[in-house]
Amino acid sequence: MNNNIKNRPVKTGRYSSVHLYYVLLAVVLIALLQPKGGTWAYLLNVRWLYIFLISFGITNLLTPLSIKLCHKFKLLDYPEERKVHEHPVPRIGGLAIYIALVITISRNLQFSKELTGLMIGCTLIFLVSFIDDIRKLSTTVRMIVQIIAALIAVKMGVVITFIPHGWPLETLIEAVITIVWFIGITNAVNFLDGIDGLVTSFGIFCSLIFFLIAWPTEQKFLAYMNISLIGSCAGFLPYNWSKAKIFLGDSGSTLIGFLLAGMAVMGGWAENNSLVALSTPLLILAVPIFDMTYITISRIKNGHVKTLKQWLDYVGKDHLHHRLIKIGLSVPWTVGFIILINLCFGLASLTIRESGSKGSIILLIQSLSILSIVVVLMIVGRELTDD
Image 1: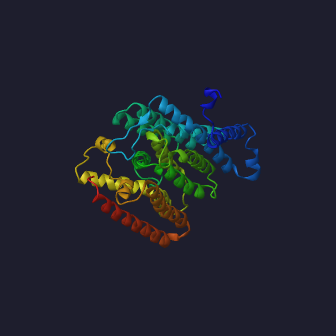
Image 2 (image 1 turned 60 degrees about the vertical axis):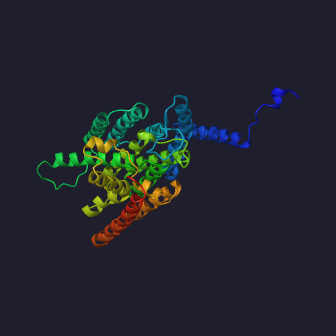
Image 3 (image 1 turned 135 degrees about the vertical axis):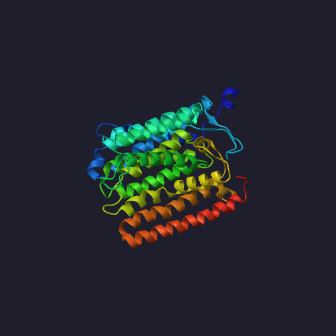
């Protein structure tokens, strides 16, 4: 027998099935993206499913290409003392998610002034973070771009409006608070991106809760934006789960953070009940808000950070996910535990709308009690680490 034929590699069933999957996925996407590819969704009143399938399919198809691109151009996240992975991992997963979001939102043809402003802002956030993933940028540059992105969103109507009408400097105060909210949530979610699958799972869960509130209340622009993010993150998650084949990178985590911050502001969470309107997004995004608040207080108290620049640049293993790993949880169990915590807050955010003032206060006390338990876990984890 010819040695060349004898030694030729044989394609395994798995190898063939994976390629067949991507071919079929590409065919389905082409069909869905046709001008009349979503007619069935309109007829069945499941436009949200159509959007999910497109965003999921595009991300799931593009992510393997992103992985190959990263390896080819050495766009890798290398292990170091402050990181938990042991081998170089591609770090521009945000590219696939961003492309999927843009194509899905454009194809859906459902725009509003606020949604347009949010997409422009998240584009700026993505671009500067993508460049930062490839070639490190200064904290000043990143912060300036974040402020500009937030200003664009505010200018287009994505603004917190809870200051009583007629107060002095009402518009200015609301704009400043909104900008601080955007920057805070964007960086809080970015800080949370320290282990495989966490921020991707968090993005799916938070968007799902926002969607479950927005869809029945006919906030269609908000609902479509959320389902697009759910699909994009779901398509990326199989490659980002432990052990991750690719990371979100700052381009992915800040993109998800900025979108969640914007959708929290866009939503109408309650009518004639300011307590519920304010509490709903705070409950849904409670985990990154708590994590950022806790580590900020801890780092200032311990003298680790003294300026905003130091706060943004500081990298330590003192986040919630690090502490949970320190007390013995594996990475998948840590992700599951954090999402379970967020599930408690998410259920509270869904229930609080029907609970009245007294019920709302009880739910908020319950949520604070859960956070108290988390604080205990953080303290226990701190005893096992130098951070």
